Image (cartoon, rainbow, N blue to C red; front, side, top):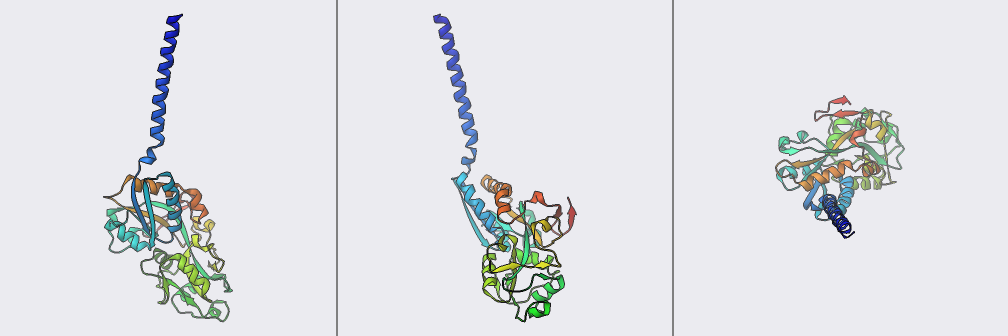
Amino acid sequence: MKKKFLVGMIAAGALLTLAACGSNDASSSSSSSKDLSGKIIAGGSTALQPLAQQSSTEFMAKNPSVQVTVQGGGSGVGLTQVAAGSFQIGNSDIFAEEKSGIDASAITDHKVAVVGFAPIVNAKLDVKNLTSQQLQDVFTGKVTNWKEVGGSDQKITVIGRTEGSGTRVNFEQFALGGATEVKGPTQDASGSVVQMVGQTPGAISYVALSYVETSKEIKSVSIDGVAPTEKNVVTNDYKVWSYEHMYTNSKKETAADKAFIKYVANNEKDIKKLGYIPISDMKVERDAEGNITQK
């Protein structure tokens, strides 16, 4: 009996030892994300800023040893600063190939979402749709009164975007047919654009769809009868859209950088909640030259 009891105790002890080892391995595996550390500055595109900001809060809660700071400044700033090594991540609404002075081969592109851009007007304005030609005429200053495009007798105030804005590059290319907007008041942040249009009677500008629902003082405008909606963007029926890029410096990319970008790209709940579109939902693809191919 003593022999059987002793054998049983040894076996039980061995099982406990194995269980403890297994427990340690699981703990080590599950806490691997806690091994991430470092500081990340993700700056540039203000169109991407809401998603990057929301994701950074959630990511830091899961990875307390990583500090993520999200800044705006425009896509040009994001691309320039990540190429220079000042930002760990450069947020951009445009491909690096579209920005002069940037060596696209020295930075790595990570597409995390798609965003549409909508013309917006003051909510009190009685205009719901503009043809492509009317939109071009308004933004280039050829038309200066809303009565010329079906609205009331009211002066048009065009609020533009600064030169480094990726939103501006995309809007001029895909909404204005390559035309350059008239010189006038400009804003470099999408939130400021929304506020200024809402406070200015007769004003028109453009922002990412993620900003359209942030104020009741503005409303979006259809182009050629096609509304700027997710449904129309994914099929390219509404053509004013772009990828949201998070660029990294190829020589300085860290594990924390990669993990944060992966988190943003996979954060489908916030992507949809904040007005962006998951890349997997798109029915088409677009390259740096603007060429469209069906998936």
